[in-house]
Image (cartoon, rainbow, N blue to C red):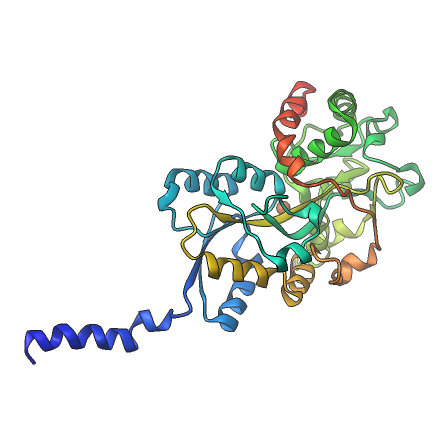
Length: 341
Ligand code: FE
C-alpha cells in the first residue's frame, strides 16, 4: 500500500471503527465532591441510556473549586457537584459557573433549592435535625435550635467543629432568620452547653451521645441512616439508642442543605451536561438518592426512603439556599468570636 493510500485509508477506518465513533454521543466531564460510590451508579445508568460517556474526577470541594479557578477557560470540567449550597454559591461568586435555563430543571427543582439565576441546582436534600438519646430526654423538652442555648442543656450537647460547612450553613440560616446579634448570643449559649470541645464528624457525635458523653447530638439524617444500616454492629447499636426530633416545626422549619450541581463557565459539552442534569432530577435518579444515600429527594413528587419515612413528614425551612453562601463569611466570624472551636 502506498503511503498516500494509507494517509486516506487509516483516518477513514479510524472514523468508522475507532474511538471517535464510540463516543459519537459525546461526553461530560464532572468534578465531584461527592464520593464516587454515591454518584457513579447513577452516571453509569446515564451512559447506558444515552451513550454519553461521563468522566468523573472526585476530590474535596475546596480543592476542586481551586482547580476550576486555576484552570479558567481551559478547564476540562463541564459540571461541579458539591454536597452543600454554601460552596455552590462560592463557585458562582468566583465566576466559574454559568446560568442554565431549563424548563425541566425549573419545574422539578423547587425555587428555594436552586440559584435564582440558574447557576446551580439542588439534587438531594439533607436535613440537620436534633438527635437525642431515647429515654434520657422527653421530646416535649425539645422545641427549636434556638432553645438549645438554654442553660438547662449545660454540658449535654455534642456537635462538630465550626470549620465544618454543615454547621456554618446552619448558623448562616439562623442569621437569616434571627439576625446577627441574636445569633451571636445564641451561639455563645450553645458553646457553653457543649459536652466537650468539638471533634470528629457527625457520626462521632451520635457515637458520643450513645456512649453517654452527651444527651443531644446534631447530625444530618443520612449519617443516622448510614449507621442504622451499617454492617458494623457497634455503629448500629449506637444509632439505635437515638431518636430524632424535628425542630422549629411551629416556625420556619428544620434546617436543610442540598447536594447540588453547577454548569461550569468553561463547559465545552454544554448540551450533554444539561442532559445529565435533567437525568439527575428524573424520578428514578431521585428515588435512588432517597434509598441509597439516605437523603431526601429534592423533588416533592418522589417519596423518601424507607427509614426516612419512619421519621415522618416535617416542615423544612423555605429559605433560598443561596443565603447560606451569602451569610457564610459572617457565620464563620461569628462562630469564631464566641469560641466555637
Ligand atoms: Fe456529609
